[in-house]
Image (cartoon, rainbow, N blue to C red; front, side, top):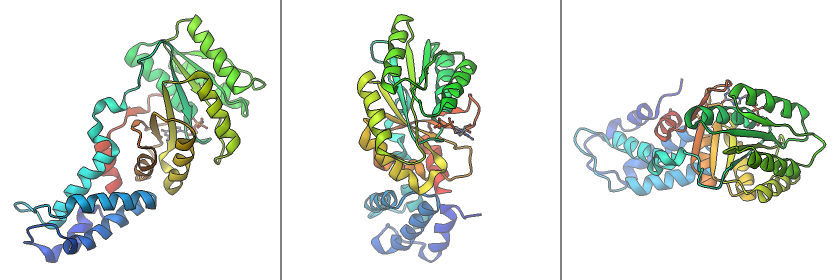
Length: 300
Ligand code: GDP
């Protein structure tokens, strides 16, 4: 087991009790430990660097009050800064979906194959049915894996939402437009559009999802990313963030044993709120994202 950050810093700073302020010299070694802890949590290096620089800026000159050791004072700064980066300062509204549009509110799902998009569509449909009673329609624009269309139909049925059938021979843009037309005619309040994912990022996939985005102009474009992805999360997030105006992130598979450093990498790149966390395979395994809990998890 890894020591948690407080324990690690306590070891480093045993000899530094009684110092009144955090300084360049008394934080240098501790910041190295923070850096290591983040790397062990699989946060990508550019995100680690930016974070350490922020913590340093906030920490230097900070008074070490009362019975705290400099290590405890620094852990406080690290925790606050990480929670803030995870979105704690954005308030609870940050994790809400935007429905301020002429219905249907369109939600477009983007992400690599296996990230959990289709499962998340089912979870979102169920969540929206249960929490808002909205009439939800789902559609799959994944024409490369016919099984994906069937999988979406199954989870949509389980979620108690409506499913718009598509054919693998149709074009993704035509599918999305046909579903939108159907949703308008049948008074659906939400349309969730699932898209194809590849195992890696490729230009054709990006062009395709951009075309779908341009055709249906979703109010929410959610980037779905697997928390187990580790260091690669940063490249994937960059590719999707460059291609599409993302409005939020869904971090899946947080029930796995990763420390979830991907969350920090993805925030670093997209700057968009992580709106939901996937915490189980089953359809009730979706939670509003909790920034403080995530910060504690990353710190170990
Ligand atoms: P897609 O290719 O992006 O549509 O991904 P899928 O929705 O098909 O999900 C890929 C796999 O991840 C499936 O086996 C899902 O059951 C699983 N999965 C998705 N979300 C979660 C989650 O939050 N937790 C766990 N444990 N498994 C998940």
